[in-house]
Length: 114
Image (cartoon, rainbow, N blue to C red; front, side, top):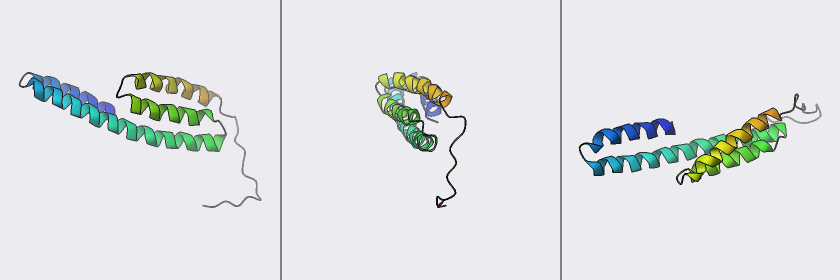
């Protein structure tokens, strides 16, 4: 969603630059800020899901992946965050390959709370 907002803003500001350069730059700044906020919100939910996956599977790398994604989203405002997101994606692949073949089933003595 954030990328759609960003691309729409870029194209909209290019069209309006012909009429008023100040308006085009203002649109680009505002749209970039909205896109960054949307990306941070999306990465927050992604981090929460990776934390749950880490708890359920016992693969702690998923927790690190979620952390790198959220830090990368925050730092994407200053371009270094894009590099962190790429590193997180590579680490995500490694984490998926390190998943166990079978998960431990909860013991029958354990109480399951729904």
